[in-house]
Amino acid sequence: MKYETEEKILAQARAISRDRIIRGQEMTAPRDMCGVLQGFQQEVFVAVFLDARHRVIAIEELFYGSLTGAAVYVGQVVRKALLKNAAAITVGHNHPSGVAEPSHADRELTERLRQALSLVEIRLLDHVVVTADTYVSFAERGWL
Image (cartoon, rainbow, N blue to C red; front, side, top):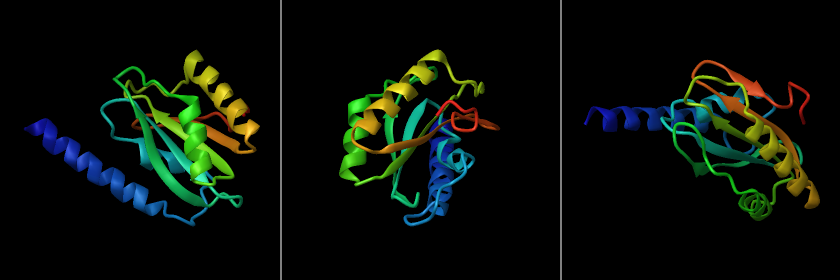
């Protein structure tokens, strides 16, 4: 019972954070992903679809996993971006473990996403890994 109540509160907090990033608003800072991804008990992969001026078209939770990982399907991310008519995309996922450092698998996934999206002329602007109190931005580290 307590777990269900905590999940409901966290879901409401995420909805409030997400509402601050509304359609048409520019999303330019990696920190913007923190409010979207903090508070999940399992790993969640999120995509923010952007227009040519980097204004939000939509935010979607695409894949869910366990405490230690989530399977991400590159083709589905590309398909969603095309359906949203996105010019750019920022992706992110959380690390419930509390360690924000991206894994080797995170870096490989990001490169596969970048390549696949570039084939259809959609820019991958960033991949942000978020924990409860910090984040790591691939763009800020020069990896994108």
